[in-house]
Length: 184
Length: 397
Image (cartoon, rainbow over all chains, first blue to last red):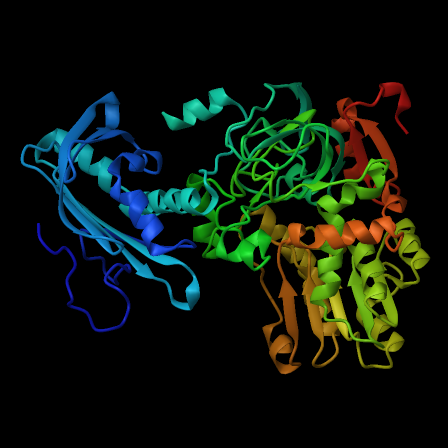
């Protein structure tokens, strides 16, 4: 999995926009965050921070400056794991990664940070590509990761935005017990 | 604690539920001293608003005493505060522009998809008003969890009665913003559809902003009488035909600005309204929109239409031709409550705005279900019900 976006298009809509007639297997979404590019890059570059904003992630352990181990909840109470390797890191601009050999769900992705026009902070674009294994388990996993992948990516980016802009992630929970239930 | 919960159309109950707790660092817990039933709560009561769940706690007009604060709240225990009905973060692009009801972070991420699909964008969270607006528990209860408590609640000076300031939470800023959206110029005639609380505050606000005449339209004699007390002229649409009356009262020009504070439950036996009701009841449409149609048709050429009224979905037969041909401007939106609260608190303290005239009934929280029934069935006499959780049943008046 190399560059997951293609440049084969006839208008100025970004490759991350939904296309007529479907198309790309990649999930990509852009959100504007009212904070400087470097702040958001700094948050993201410590992968252990990401479990806070991502659904289904149980833990992300940093192994060294390029590798992190991901543990993710899958349907039916099972757990899938992989080790992720940073393949490109441009401070303040971009981080790209792909899973190492032996991943339960091979995947790759990149997150890009660009100055938003008009001084509105930063455009953050996340592109994620999952390559689920074959077979029945693979189908279940595929369903989990790709049933509504655009919505999932958008939700994760929204939580990132909330945390960066407000210092917390919005919840309607009234009690701590309700909050715990939401987190699991 | 005790709280008023929703169970279905015309079925609300006061029940015992778990007390709220501090969840996020900017939260505060407020012990409610006064909480009102809003006209828009009747949309929930009548089952017009989707994404309600059994057990949801209602109420978005409330005030009380700070009893607990999160690590990053700027409030202090013991302070008395009025809480805006909109849940807004204060830090996003829209909040920085004081467009608080368009806040991007007020809704939990998982509640943002419905509005994204229906409206194109998610809006601010609201207290006690369905899961589309966040699923936050409301304030018709003994206690409430208030997120972003460093941005929303306004601290009330010692010795000021709840009844004087409670309506800063919603209807006073909503009426004020409605008049502001009408871009009133000196000499203007302003017509206001609906003399509920928002309409009556719009009448007061329009005069304060320099309107020469305000014409108030309703069919409840008592509500028209309240409008008349503020200097408005009135049209009872059961007596007179609204369009004809407006033309005769303005020499054929039409009102310079029209404010629709009725919204999706417009009453009256007008042909379009009957069709709307059939469509709503058969799920072919969601909004009954007689008042906004009439406002557009009556408005003078080049005039302004302001729409504080709540609409939730789609309307049929919107007079787009009249809107275009007559060169009208339409302004609307959920209220940016946080923006208006400080100046309106000052206006109350200086006796420029009167709010207490509105309250017709004060009830203990335990009688909230009865309050909903009264408000729903007797709109002439019941102009506003304030629930007081601390009130003795015997004190009810």
